Image (cartoon, rainbow, N blue to C red; front, side, top):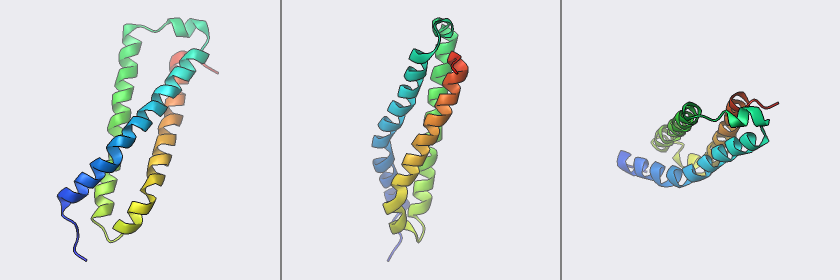
Length: 115
């Protein structure tokens, strides 16, 4: 079987991962909102333009990290493990999203002063 052209692998990576970015971002935003609402009133009122810009920066960095999945996807699709990868890549999505949620939790605790 011939290897798929690289542009097909890139297209497949974008087609698979980009719709899931919405779920990833919803998880990250939900964690921030939950910890903001649960925070004691003092830190919650301390939300300033600078802290909002800091949150925005972390969101952008989280999305840059999400792009690592594209690299892994193209790499795996051009290997002899392409068929296997296609059946288990959802695991990478679930684990990566869970890790993003955990890291966001720690960031939110630091930012909003939770327990």
